[in-house]
Each structure stands twice: as structure tokens, then as C-alpha cells.
Amino acid sequence: MKVGIIGFARSGKTTVFNSLTGAHAEVGAFGNREANLAVLKVPDERVDHLAAVYKPKKVAYADFQFVDVPPDEASGEEKALSSAALTALRQVEALVHVVRAFDNENVMHPLGGVDPVRDCRALEAEMQLEDLIIIERRLERLEKEHRKDREYEVLGRCKAHIEKDEPLRLLELNPQEEKVVSGFCFLSRKPLMLLGNYGDERIGQDDPSGLRAYAEQTDQTLIELCGAMEMEVCQLPEDERTAFREELGLGEESRTRFIKTAYAMLGLVSFLTTGETEVHAWTAPKGTRAQDAAGIIHSDLARGFIRAEVVHFDDFAAAGSMAKAKEAGHVRLEGKDYIVQDGDIILVRFNV
Ligand SMILES: Nc1nc2c(ncn2[C@@H]2O[C@H](COP(=O)(O)OP(=O)(O)OP(=O)(O)O)[C@@H](O)[C@H]2O)c(=O)[nH]1
Ligand SMILES: [Mg+2]
Image 1: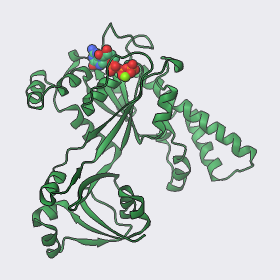
Image 2 (image 1 turned 90 degrees about the vertical axis):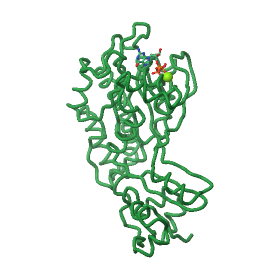
Image 3 (image 1 turned 180 degrees about the vertical axis):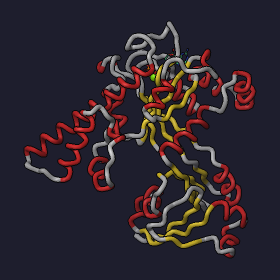
Image 4 (image 1 turned 90 degrees about the horizontal axis):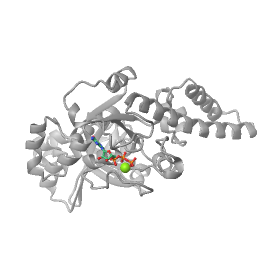
């Protein structure tokens, strides 16, 4: 799962990026820089268990791949989305908006004072405008070609929706319409999570900035954390972290909170593949069919899909081995339309 970290200049994007991934990207840097890339592995006891049983050559956890794009001077700081960011963000599957809610007189906010709700609205407007530009360009083209087809109709609805000041993620589309729209990679259609970056003094306090109320009113997911503190703690040796967190009243680690929130919000499940060569956890949206899950592993597996052998991890663990799980009748043969469940261990039978 690829996640883009967005937000206004100096909102703490890189600080949050470091605290989620354990990376050491430079914070408070200036000038044109490269994007930061790092991976957050999703801890999974099921993977650990399978690895202990199979002793495979390779163990792979499900992961979130983060990209944190710095502002570029050419695009100007009053915009959160630089042209470099726009390019990088087309490919991501979800967005995290780091909203500045911390006071720090040494760190200038590009829009003036600290105002999280203004920032949310402004970034939302930027995304919608970028989408609108693409839509209008495409509609013009279709009109020139006299193509008043489904694409024309759906894009017309997208346009009307944005003109009502609504992000495309709130537009209901059926699966065929979704297919038409997905190729455009519209930013305002990507799932968006708000991440309030609060100052140390706000730990465990109410939120007078109005960000929490805004998130509730607009039915958006909000993670509240103190980025600077999280980053500091996450760079301590592992055995000291828990004590520090307790002392500071920081609660659950930001990465754990992020993973839980992201799975719930994005409606994700994890399924597993196992064997002597590799134990691997994969993420898929809830409701994914077996054939599409096979495609997440490798496109050949989807193309040549015959059947899937499926056993739930809990049944496997209770039985002790695959042979015993089979004996007990827990290993089922499923067809391409089987809906993959969280914790399913899957072996795809295929032929290409
Ligand atoms: N007090 C306080 N300062 C913070 C916090 N988060 C970030 N900062 C400071 O704000 C400045 C910018 O932080 P970065 O993480 O570099 O922000 P950014 O959004 O990546 O910045 P750009 O990439 O330049 O847009 C740094 O000086 C940080 O130390 C926070 O939670 N509290
Ligand atoms: Mg940065």
C-alpha cells in the first residue's frame, strides 16, 4: 500500500514520516530536495508463527510505503501541492494530510498563523482544483471528438460535484463508472486521513484549534499526535521507548495507531502465503475476490488462476501443520469469486 504524506510547508511532514517509519530524513531542511521514501512494516504475529514453522529463506510483512515530498521553490509555498508532489502523488493509494497544530515561533507557517481548519480546507481546495483541470481538459477533448459516451457522462458528473465544492471521494459511482474514473488518479478521490501534529503541551489535552470538531463534522478520520515528541522517542533504543512513552503520557506508538486507523479506514485485510521459500503477508481491500488477491501476489497468478487452496490461520495454528489442517478438513478449495478473509493462508493453483 503506497501512502503519500502531504501538507503545507513546515507542517511537520518529515517529522511524522520519520516517526512512522523510523527513518532519519532531515527535518527543518530548506531548498529543493529529493522526496523521502521509507517503509513501515506491519507487525504480524501470524507471519512470525508461520516463519517459525516453515523456516523460510525470506519473510515479508505487509507494508505501507510512504513518500514525503518536500515543497519546491518554483511552485511557491502558499500551495501545499508542488508540481513534484503532484507527480509523485498520482501513484499513491492513500493520502495523509499532516496538519500543523503546534505553536513554534521559530517555524513560519506559509499561510500566516496556525489554523488547522483553514489548512484542511485550503488543501482540499487545491486537490479539487487539480482534478478539475484534468476533467475539463478531457471533456474538451471528448467534445471535439463528438464522444458523448459513458466517460463524458461520468466526467460531467465529477465536474458538477467539484463545482459544489465536494471532493470526488464523496461521489458515489458504480463499478463501471469507477473504472472510467480510476485511470485519472484524481487526488480528491483518494482516501484521505488527517493527522493533527500537535505541540508537546497538548498531550492528553482538549483541542481548541477546532481540528477535531472539523474532522467530526466532515466525517473524516483524524489521528492526533505530537510529531516532534514521537520522532524523538522513536529514535531511542527500543527497550527505553515504552518507559519514556508512559512517563510522557504519549499512549500507543504512532505507527501502531496509524496501522490500526489505516486498516479500519481503508477497509483492509491481510492474507498470507507460506512455504519453504517465503512467508509473506499481503494487504487487500475487504471484499477482494480470490482471483484479484492472486493478482496482488503476481499478475500471472491472476491470469492463469484455476483455484485457491485456503485455510484460515487460526485453523492452521490449532492443527499445528498444513498436513494436519488438511486431515481435519480445514483446507478448502475455493474458486475465483471466493471473498478473501483476514488471516486466510492462500495457495494459488494456476496455469499460464
Ligand atoms: N514544536 C514542534 N515543532 C515541530 C513539530 N513538528 C515539526 N516541528 C518543527 O517544524 C519544522 C518543520 O518540520 P519538518 O518535519 O521538516 O516539516 P515538513 O513539513 O517536512 O517541512 P518541509 O518539508 O520543508 O515542508 C522543524 O523545525 C521541526 O522541528 C512539533 O510537533 N512540535
Ligand atoms: Mg519535509
